[in-house]
Each structure stands twice: as structure tokens, then as C-alpha cells.
Image 1 (cartoon, rainbow, N blue to C red):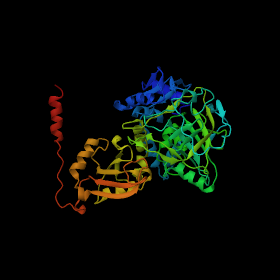
Image 2: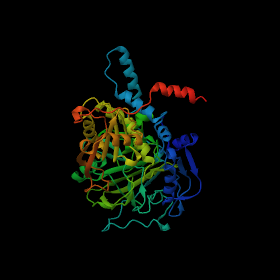
Image 3: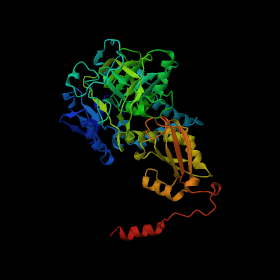
Image 4: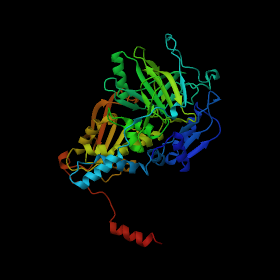
Length: 510
């Protein structure tokens, strides 16, 4: 199902009983975070919130704020336009398993699959709702040295309700020690200057003033790779940032796709309708026509990097200030009825747990294509994505668990996984208690733990160096003789099934 606007998605959430409207004014500085965090910590992810009267520096913003819109399995399924996240994953899995036809019947079946994909490729249109209001900025004055301090967010004089700038959008200051306000759900569009390939990534953006932000793309991200090429060429880098529109856009921007795979192609497949794109006003990049906001601009490789942060991050700790590129805004366009989408990150569980979990479910078939022995994978909320991975496998030969550990560390963003625990196929990896029981019961620390070094999440404050750290793998499977285990492996305790059935018949009917 495709949503023609972010408001359409919010209406679907409200009809499903998944949205709470907040009619009282709430401050973009900290108060909206507290409201959202209470919902995210509620059982099952709570409800989405529509803040109808957000304030910025005490003044009303013309745009409502929607937050926690994908923070439950139900809302995540609605965002994907699917009956459930598992159903969407099964559909994509069946597509990946397609084989060349060997009969006329197979050919017809594959033709049907191809017809399902006819809508996936984006298409260009002349204009769209994101162009209903257009504000272009005059060229900036020469920059003074050093960088000016960020504005005082408490100063009412910095608020100007018209025209739109970064200072009057209801951009959140999420946590008390944050360095300022941060755009937290931006879909950042960049282009490889050599191949022309588009990338849509999600990188937080700290607001410095009405027309500049930081661009926090970490060194392993595709946007950063594009940026390095522009720096090497000495050319100004065009960037476009869009917010809102179909919620599947934000999901696709966070998906662990291979370098060079267009995220908008995935979005078109999931929404069963081509993503309509319009050209930006001040550069040649494109953004979805039904987005709520499009922020256009550039990064100048001749400028020095600027300190960005601190920021209360998904690790549950603040990431400390580090230098990042500066994004200059040249235009802001938006719908007349635009809704500003936001999220917050922090001590888990948060909304990003469900977004990351949905990505894992959708791309589990890709892992299984590479490692057919994998049964399931889970990323517990406590592991904040990269810190802890549980994997169940159908084990058939010695040291197979170690093969899986090293294989996963070599796959995309799995390179950041700090701890990988491998268990047998009969273990529910989504039950943390069950996995920990097997970890404690089935391992000898000296024999069943492997340490290695490799790339680390730059947000991990525990590593000795930024972006480099140690990883540990735990083999919590049953041991085979070829793994140095010479005793019989004991059976686990289970009640006889006939006895269980007899007890159910005799006692549960009373």
C-alpha cells in the first residue's frame, strides 16, 4: 500500500487506534522527547504521538510534529503497507528465491513476479506537493573566522514564523546535554560524482543557525564515501534532505542495502507503486514529490570541518563532539499542510528497535542465501543494534558456529557487531532468557570464545580508538567430538509429550 502523504499514514494510524493526539502546547526543547520516551518505554512500544501545537523557543510552530510513528510491530507493518512485518519479509524472501524457469508454468510464475516489480523503479514528474511553498535563500555572506557559536535556543528573537528556516521548524532538542537541536529523521540524498548512483541515507543533522547544519555521516557510510570523492575533486557537493511523505522512505533510508543499490527502488517495491521524483530548485538532485519538506543545499570541500555534538545517541550515552562537514541550505520547500516527522534515540527500548528489527526480518533471506544453515537472527534491544547479535543455526559439522561468526562480521553493517552468540536451531533467539540459559550452560569460556579485531561503530564510546575495536564470538551450540569435546553431550530435560497431553485433558478442562 502506498501513502500519498505523511498525513495519510497518520490517518491510518489513528483509524487503527495507534495514534494519540496531543492538543496542548509542547516544547520542541526536551518536552516532546519526554512525552515520546514515555510511549516508547510502554509495553509494545506505546502509541504514536501527533503534537498539534509544538512550540519553538516558546513561540508556536506552524507545523505539527509526529513522533514514534514506527515504534511498534503494528505501526511498522502499517508503514510497510503489509499485514505484518513477517508477511512483508516472506514476500521478499520468495522473490529472492526465484530461479530461472524450467517449464512454461515456471515462466508464467516468474512473469507474475516481474509484473509485481514493474512499479519499483522511480519515475520523474514535473512537480508535486512538496513544491507548494518554495523559499530560496540568498547567497550567504563570506564566513567569519572562527565558526560562530550556535544560537541561543532560548532566545525568542531567533524565531521567525515566515518564511521557513531551520530556526522555526519544530526541530527537537532531544536531551539536556545535546549541543543544540537535531533533525533526527532526515533522508539525505547524495550522488556518486563518478557513476551518478544515488544514495539515500539517514544521518543526524545538528542545526547551527537558520541555514547551516552539521552532516553526521560516519566514515563507513555511503554518503561519506560520496563526500570523499567530492573532496578529492575539489568540487562543491550537492545534497538534498527530505522529510515525511510515505513512511517507507525513512525505512528504506535505514535499510542495510548494498552500496550502489537505490533505496528508492526498495521503497517502490515495498509500496507497490513507483516513487515519483521532482528535481530540486537549487541543484540537480531529486526528492519524492509527496515529501512534506525538502531542504536543499551543498557541502563545500574547501571549508574546514566543524564540531558537531554532543548528542544523546542510540547507545544510551551521549556521543561527544567530533568534526563533521557543514551543510549549507539554499532552499526549503514544503507542503502547505506539512507535518514534521521526528524520532528520538536513547536508552532502549526506543522506536529504532522496531525499525531495525523490521530491516533484519526483511533481509534475513539474504543472510540465508549466503549461509543456508542459519535459522533465525535477533538483535536484542539491550544491544542497541551492533552490540549483541543472537544467531540460531542447524549445525551439522564441527566449528560451524565459528564459520557463521566470521561470515557475519564480513557482511555489511554486521561488521560492527561487538558480540555474536550462536545457538542451536531449537533455541528461540527472540527469547533473551532462553539464549542466555544456553550461553551459560553450553560454553566453556576458554574453548568456546573467539576474539578478533575489526571496524567498530564510531558511536561506541568503549572502544580504545574511534571506529576500531574488539569483537567476541560465543559458540553456545551443542559440542561435537571434532571440537575437542570427548564426553557424551547430555540430553536436555523435557516432559514426555503423551504425559503433557494427558494432563491437559485431565486438568485443564476442569
